[in-house]
Length: 335
Image 1: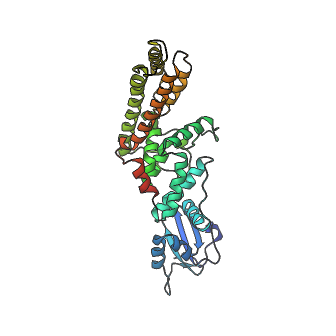
Image 2 (image 1 turned 30 degrees about the vertical axis):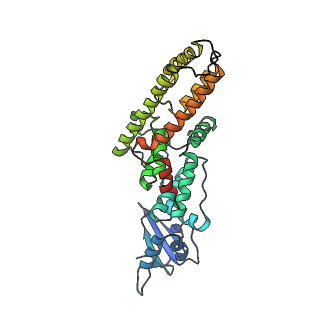
């Protein structure tokens, strides 16, 4: 039974005086009510429409307040408020810090729950602007990570990939999973299991789980091993084991020795957190400092690195048993 009038202290944002239904979201001891227009919400979601049809008041019904039926919502008030405002005003997404990630996480979570397909797609597309599904997007991500100053104590992209991964699993957004696991594989497993990284400790109602599931422990291991294998294969086969191109203009053996030296330097320089997709780019820069390599061999190396990186990126979803990027795009962004 509800009071005849919802107290001001319980009224959330938005609260429309001319609304005709009240949504009551309760989380622990916190209850927040939103007075909205059933037609507006039902227009966006068949789930809302069905809920509201079941909530039509009858004479003597106790589930009425302010002359409107009250529908109890099993959502966090913060997320429900964000969703309702997005339905009325349109969604607005930014990437200025970790709070913006939690904002999109709340919308994605409830848009998925209430089958609001267009809003779900908007949230996914926004996440993909930061967390890429193309190689060009990966390169932009790395460039931003190097150049963007921290916000507070959090470095770009402000969000731990474990939170991104768990949000993707929770909302069944598979196109984000390969990228999340690739960047998660740059972290040591003991550090992930400790769960004490500053990005994992920011409190927010929309924060995803900070636990690595058994399923993702397996996929993390596969991605970690794939990344290390790719680095070692690149050093051994594409650098140390490289032979001059047929159009080589250098002195006999000169270019080949340069590539052996490059492989030797790279084998000593890589660390556990080295990215297999970016390391070959760094190798091109490293080779540029060696004057003993002719232009045709440099050009051939750049072309082979480009081909290798495209192949590695294309292989990423398959490492963890997912279909191609193209199929993932069709599944998650269709419509």
